[in-house]
Image (cartoon, rainbow, N blue to C red; front, side, top):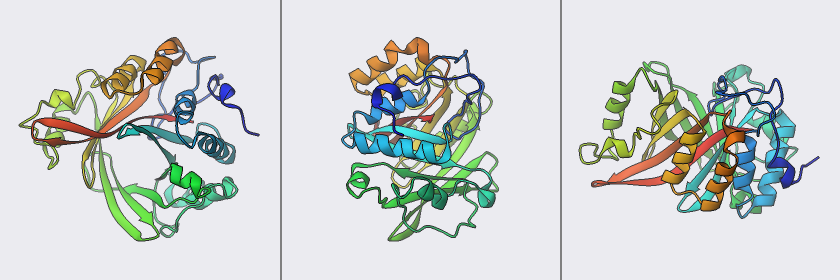
Length: 292
């Protein structure tokens, strides 16, 4: 049974509820969360501002019913001043996974329909998809699904993303994870190896923000048309800094500010896609992440 939005915006943590970051890795909360808001509150607040709000809310609840609470990751994003939403499903058992693309399609009882992808024996540990207005108009038919596999041989945790659609498959991104405190030199070295940002012409502080460096993990990605930096394990004050830095809507920022004391038990993950035009860094997409 679906819940009305007013209930989704006040859902609260219970004793024993888990805490996961955007890689679905567990973490210890920085404060007691009993009776405070669930991270899904930030998701449903943003979805309510999207053109396909009713459909998106229905689909998200279908995913929760199908595979369980705290099992899926959301990415709430802004692209060209508009909201966007991507959902990520992890299962690190790979070929022994319980939640595959086929399993999710079945669990949502046909509300989501995925394009044909690779053989299920492919050892992917995560797949993701966008809940767009186009998908809503197509009654849940998704044009694209993204598969993520490991990248053995790297000295840091690393992954590769591929896009699958009716037109075939293609390489999308490489991801590299660093300890945010112990590997700062390696992070800078990696940032400087970019064809999309002449780091000798820009200030790295405008990208590798000092306000966000005090976190747990930095992930750097190389994509087809840009690069990306993710800060994982930031607190509520750092999340608010990020929302202001990337100019999220004032009403959304106020929503978070007014609930600061009910969101301070959570850690957050934030990221920006960027490229530079001379001395000016252009942020082409940015988002924050949580579990639902």
